[in-house]
Each structure stands twice: as C-alpha cells, then as structure tokens.
Amino acid sequence: MTVELLRLDGVSRQYGRGETAVTALAGIDLTIIAGEMVAVMGASGSGKSTLLTIAGGLTAPTSGEVVIDGQWISAMTAKQLAVLRRRTLGFVFQDFNLIPALTALENVTLPLELDSWRSRDSRRAGLDALASVELADRAGAYPDDLSGGQQQRVAIARAIVGPRKLILADEPTGALDTQTGEAVLRMLRHRVDAGAGAILVTHDARHAAWADRIVYLEDGRIVGQTSAGSADELLGAGR
Amino acid sequence: MSVRQSILAILDQGPSYGYRLRAEFERRTGSTWPINVGQIYNTLERLERDAFIVKRETDTDGHVFYAITPAGHTEVFEWLRSPVPRPATTRDELAIKLALAVTLPDVDIDEIVRVQRMSTMSTLQQLTRAKNAGDDPDSTDELAWLLVIDSLIFQAEAEIRWLDHSRSRLARATAKGLSASENPSEPRRRGRPARAGAPIIDERTDDAEALR
Image 1 (cartoon, rainbow over the protein chains, first blue to last red):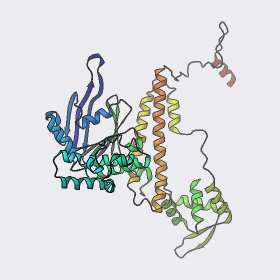
Image 2: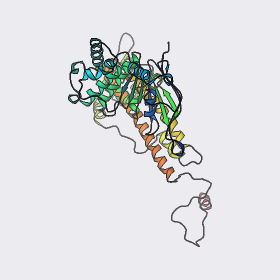
Image 3: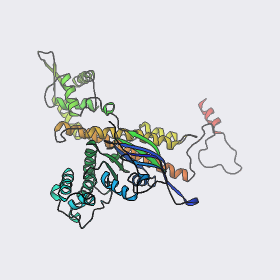
Image 4: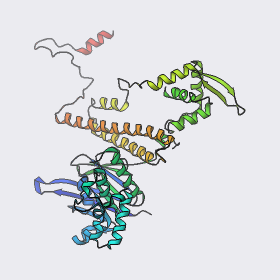
C-alpha cells in the first residue's frame, strides 16, 4: 500500500511585490511516498531550498497547498504546525545546527524533550538513533569534540529520532569528505528503505543518484524527473 | 583487446577450457562485460595462432584444455604493467553531436544538453543502486565488481560535469551574442578580409574549378 507523506499541489512562492517581485517557485506539484527518497537538483537560485522549507512547513507558499502526512497545513495554527513538524519531520542542514552546550545525546533527544517525552523513553530513543548512525559510544560527547562527519551523523540521528516519517535534508554532505558523505547517504538510504520518506537537496550528481527519483528545478519550475530503473540493461542480468 | 588479454591472464593462473574461462572472466569482472562462449573460442584460436597458448588434453567430459606458453606469460606481464592508452582525438558521439549541433541554426542546444543530462543521471542512479545492492564489500568477487562499477559511476559523473560545463559555456556565449552557426550555402570567407576595392572571388567557383 502506498502511503503518501507529502504532497505539494500547485505550490508557488514569490518574494516581494509588484515590479520587484521574484518568483522562487512556480506551480510545483510533488508527492513523496513512504520508502521513497527524492533528490532535488538545480542551479543556485533555482528554488531548491525554498522548496525544502515549504515542504517542511517553515515557509508558507504564496499559493497552492501543502499536505504533510495527510494534514493540510494551511488549515493549521502555528502551534499545531510546530507540533506536526516536531513529530513528523526531521531536518538535516549542511552546517549541522547542533547546540554546542548540549551533548550528542541531548542534541538528538531535544525534539522529544520538547514534545514532553518521558526522560527514560527519550533517552532510549536517542541512544537507538545514535546507534543507527554508529555513534552510541559518543553519546556523552559535545559537538566540539566530534569530527565534522560525526557531527553530521548526530544531526541525522536527531532527524530520525522517534517516529519521524519524513526527512528533509539540505546539502547534508556538503561539508564532508567523500567517504563520510557516502556513509551519511547510506544511513539516510537505510532509513528510507525501512519506511521513511526523504527529500535530499543537492548539487552533487553522485549523491543525488542515491535517490529513487530526481526532480530537476529551473527558475522555480520542475523541468524534468528521472527514476532509477533496473541496472540489468546496463550491466547484463548477471548481477 | 582486453578480452584477449584478460583470457590470457586467467590462463596464466593455470590451464582451463572455454566455458570455465567465460565463467571466470565474468566472475572476475563483476559480470559487467557479458561475452558469449563463441567469442571465447575465437579468442582462444587467435591466442593459439599467435603461440601465446597451446592446446592440451581433452577431459572425459570433452572439455579441451588450453595452457599458457612462456610468450603468453610475457604478454600478460607486459599488458599488466603498461598503461591503457587514451585516444588523443575524440570519437565520442555525444561530444561530436554537441559540437555539430552548436553550428546548426534553429537547434535548441540547451534542450539537447538537458535531455542528455537527465539520461546520464538516470544511468548514474541505476549504477548507484546496483552498487549499493552488493553483498560483502570485502570479498574478492565484490571488490572486482566494485572496481568496475565505480569506474562506470565516475564516467557517468564526469559526463554530467562536462554537460554542466558545456551548458555554462553556451550560456556565456549566448550572453555575448556569439553563434557558431553558419549556413553552408553561404560563401565561406577564408584568410584575411579583402581590401576595399579588391575584386571579390567566389570561393565556390574556385572549389568547383579545382574539382574538375
């Protein structure tokens, strides 16, 4: 059964008004289902990041509708939307956005604490999330004591902790070396294969290739999509 | 050429016969280069003709075994230690297609690049999916497969980067109002511009004369 996690219906976003108005997104239709990773590619200024912030309910569209996990966000109050974001969405940013005064575990469990989880439950969920990114042994370390790759893995653990269904990642491997970047993508991929959905904004073709579907943006419009088919025709049926 | 050298390299590990050589070739190259057994026997015939291998006994199942000769061993050694030459000139269809398209009027080069980029990106997705579907990355078979598939991934990525570069170059050229398009029916001027008052020579006539 297909479970729809996100739907953008005719979403447009303009900044400014009148003659100086800039259209960041124009008429975007996009659906993400459970178990699907969608990469968004495009040149700088094509609208990639705006699309991600609208998909995450951080920016309101000028027109069109956003449906997150079956809920129309235009009908929600700011408080309801904040709760939906906290419970359903996980964000990963290029610059990690970890809080230096909190340990890795505290950073990971912060969304759960804000959601009034019992301390014991949030600790267990946090350790599970850190274990899934192979950092359970660094739970007590502060961000400054972690390498860039480890910090990004903590950020991913924070994005997937608890019952998060949709991961929104903006250039999550931008600051990482090739190997660490690949490890981060592998973790995201595992999470998606386990039933989450993900949007990955990237300019890197090799990273985008991890997605099931790639959406190409130009001047705020989707100009094409590609899906990963079978590799048999490329490599023979021996694999 | 590399099938011939690869078969020879496998035979350098010990005598073998056609079907097993094909299976070994596919196993050692991650099944990324399918070959039929007919190609194997043709290759074995040529290697025997060139004295790099000799025919040995036939087993009870009718398999004809081949063994490498000292000359064959030297050939393998030389192949492994020599770089694979890259062609200095391109025969790449895509590069030639773009180069030609940019000289044609009323052709949407940007669209050609965009369509190609999406196609190559789809290939890169398939390769990445195939790579990540592998088993134990530390096994010898998997390592051989990963080396080959990484090569294909890097080639696809390089093509995408080249397409992006080409698109930027075309955008800059368009912004400057440059165009390489030319009508072949128009007379083509060569050399320095004619001096004012000098007689104009129709080069088509010259060329036609030269051909007679």
